[in-house]
Amino acid sequence: MTQTSPAAAPVQVPPARRHRVHRAWFVAAVTFVTITGAAAFRSLPGLLIDPLNQEFGWSRGTIGAAVSVNLALYGLTAPFAAALMDRFGIRRVVAAALTVIALGSGLTVWMTAAWQLLLCWGLLVGLGTGSMALAFAATVTNRWFTERRGLVSGILTAASASGQLVFLPLLSWIVEHHHWRPAAVTVALSAFAVVPFVWLLLRDHPADVGVAPYGAKEFVPKPPPVTGAARRTLSVLSTSVRTGTFWLLAGTFAICGASTNGLVQTHFVPAEHDHGMPVTTAASLLAVIGVFDVVGTIASGWFTDRFEPRRLLAVYYALRGLSLLFLPMLLGPAVHPPMLFFIVFYGLDWVATVPPTLALCREQFGEDSAIVFGWVLASHQVGAALVAYLGGVARDVFGSYDVVWYAAGTLCAAAALMALVIRRTGPAAPVPAVS
Image (tube, rainbow, N blue to C red):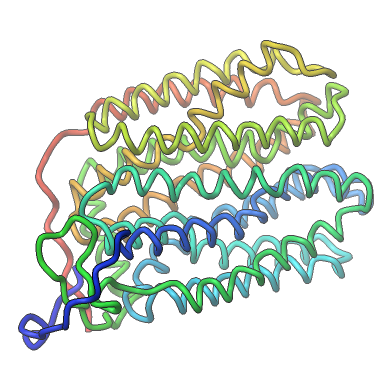
């Protein structure tokens, strides 16, 4: 927990001028744009599998391994990034992360060996994206809002889907007509383009502009920087792992990642291409998932403010598993109504799990919830990484993705049961800041 110094409490900050719209909503808007711009990287891996296989002869398992490193680092970096934001501020951490994303994506245009794909796309882009993952959205929500947190977390989570919607059709067209290298450069430039917005418009804390968090009754002084970010992150982990709630949240979120980022986002396009569908058409279907994901995630945030998050999670995972069990029967060379129904149905559920999971982290872990959620997100990405790799291996071995769809559907059913087991308890004791 971030500690405030004794001198911090009596500090009098002059009241800010009244605004018709609270400054927190402007910060949320900048955060939305930032996550949207950085989401271009998430649109590209599924589009690279066939071009890299054709140009370099790399197996789908090899390419999937690079995607796995990317996804794993995306998750494992997140809890440390949340602590670094407490130490250095949101603005500095996010601006640096966007720069690393742009660097890693841009360097891939010169790669000639598989280890270079692992280095650029796996290591650099993974570290950069992990530093501004959903823990970024959680930190902004916790600092700037005391009301409407479910709605705001849903909107910021939907930003990633919006980025997919904007970039996926464009990147698929570039890959098909101009090869994959211009698409990688497009991702790099999009990340660089967001940096000025972050540096000029984003602020670390409401006290920086002399306002209270949205919905707060009293002004909240800005806490001093927290040193020992890595030690604090590990201390929070050592405490949270002693609770059954942490393992249930981590387990369900690992299955969430396996059934979304690891499976559908990485392998849906090549799976449809295996059945004769053009890459641009398959990519457009994946983008449509992003459209309905925006609707579903914002709605989930609204529901989370009003309904029991455990039951919401159980419903979301059950419906997702059911849809994945039917998917192998829907794949084909052309778009038909049952496939469109799947796209809409699955899209509404894509990351609807995030707002209730965030709510449970806040309920159980208090002011350490952003770091705890970072560790829960790490499990999400580990699950995604495993399936990104194993899905490619299954395709190489069996010549089909069918077994992976069925396995993911079964895992989602297990996640629904796990969500119902989570107990309603008081917040865990927060971990003191390490100085």
